[in-house]
Image (cartoon, rainbow, N blue to C red; front, top):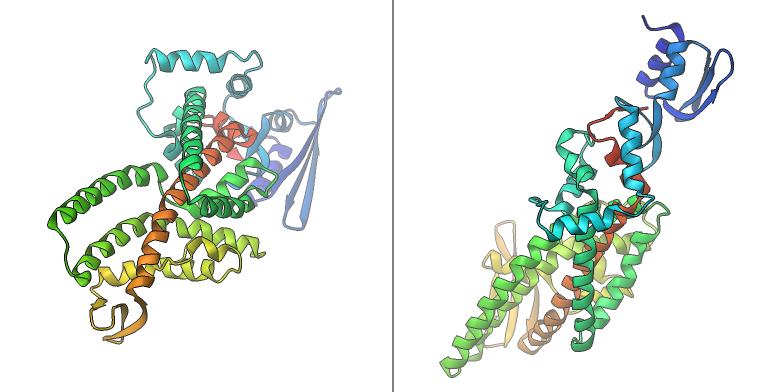
Length: 385
């Protein structure tokens, strides 16, 4: 039968109060003092009842959906303590063991760790058994993240030596430091991933086939022996649209970073492509990132609203307004050629940066104490309090 103070504690928790501190005194009889808060309200329960005492000592450190510290009640306290010791790895034996398992293929990772981590962090039911692999394969996932970071670092060094697009990379990298401003690593990563909202690995995997197709098209055009400018421009336009597609996906986290740099506390999670672009290009410094880029071209082409005017030598962009085609902007053929060359610099710079950023942010999550406490509660935590 639950005791009086036990029921009082549970009633306070059911009223959405949070535990702020727990004091345990091993006197005779043992005594507990629990402090609660909700908004500006506070309550305190002091008790020597046995069931209230064991309820208090069953509460352990946990992390809520925002990455903030709190308390949780676990089904199996010994299992939780065992998992925490495993994740702490004081003897430093787990990483070499995980490396060996991966090398010998005795353990197969048949899922995408970054995707599962992202789903886990966004889930309202983080402690569901379906996320158990994040706990069981913690060190394998960590080793794989190190390998991927080493690979992208090697690619980055090669990129720095060969590319002329590094100013775009450097400027965007400087802007993205705004995502590092929080003291808690998990919250830093969650803020960035909140605005990112796409699978960079999948996106990168789709770019290479597109580039292969473009190279094949260029080879055919070279063998054609020339053509009128207005016809050739159609092919250049197709390339521009192919390069634009991944870049439009990158605009949202760039826009959010611009707004954060301007002091906006909680930018909107997502805007449409054109609004993202408009916010970025208006910034006196970071507008340089999208210089000579116009996503309206991509949108207009998709809706048949582009005219290549051979009389004026201009590319005219239209939009549908109230059932009529209205010109929104135009570019001379020379201006569009400049835009195309600029886009060829933007694509590798932003792909490299976004890929690096995602890997770093994922590793920050994996190494954070908050994340380790979260996964320690998988299939064990009964409730946050």
